[in-house]
Length: 105
Image (cartoon, rainbow, N blue to C red; front, side):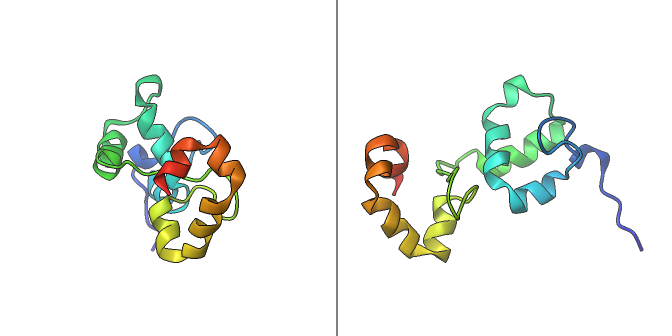
């Protein structure tokens, strides 16, 4: 039996156009957070907005945009690879050029 994805769950814009919001929340959480923080400029279905608000409204997370944990939250990395957090804390580039990230570590 083939499962049908509800039309409202499919993005109609951006680099993940035609992808399901459910898949993106699982695999590209940082992109979903970006959508959430840019809702004013995007045409997003109201149900997707509700989904993202429930997921991120109280979220002060930092997401990596580089490296082996690209698109993962710091909480995810802390739970799954704490030695990478230690590496980031000791990294001069992060310390000198990424103050928000460094503070969140």
